[in-house]
Length: 297
Ligand SMILES: C[S@@+](CC[C@H](N)C(=O)[O-])C[C@H]1O[C@@H](n2cnc3c(N)ncnc32)[C@H](O)[C@@H]1O
Image (cartoon, rainbow, N blue to C red):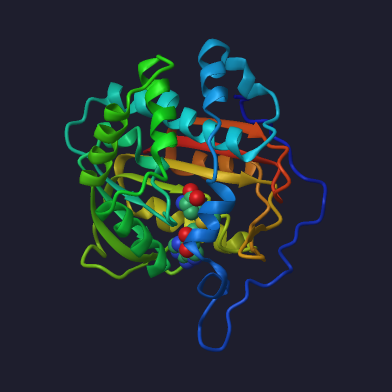
């Protein structure tokens, strides 16, 4: 993984485009975001061979990634190889995690489930919460290959048995204890935890992927950090240089941000900042992915 290259786009940004909210208060997500379409488009594959190659040669993450399967493998690598060892070193016994804009995904908890006590799974859309509640209740094997990938990374062995996958899946399901609607722009929580602060706040592809206006991205970032306890850990994954992203045949808004934008925000209230980024060559409308984790001062 490359360290942050402080590139700033010379292109004029697209912030002039308005984030569309209709007269009934519905934004583009209410109308166009279907969990099933989103999962099919962005999480249909994870490249297990890429993970196996990474174990023998970590430098493969320095080359541009050529498809969504490799990108998803990189997300798992970030959690298993960077975030998990940091949390283990901190040796805290009891941790509560708030995940913001969780969508209908659970890959972000596969490693974390081993070191946290409970997860508040939140999103703006109820259909996403329902989708993951159904996964929790059912026998859907959608995430099994992702769990296999994480176990290969954690155990540094190429072959993982089905029972190991099922065991980790049960662990994740057990940690998913709370579900609620949370609007990161308005900082409005629909549950009884409106004034709660968390040990870990994580948010992937959310705050830069729900607006095309930088000032909204900025205030959503502040809302996330406001939910974090002092000395709590933030974990963010973000699209780099995005101009939008397709879901269900519609291009949803995104803010065009770069490493330096994120670093400027992080430096104000965080220490021990770790930032990595990868270049992506897939046909989607972003140039790369930025990973960041840090501790609130
Ligand atoms: C690009 S998806 C990211 C989903 C998931 N975190 C992932 O890693 O793929 C953006 C998510 O943000 C949610 N969202 C949209 N507006 C939001 C808001 N105002 N506050 C919180 N989440 C929002 C959407 O419903 C969607 O699930």
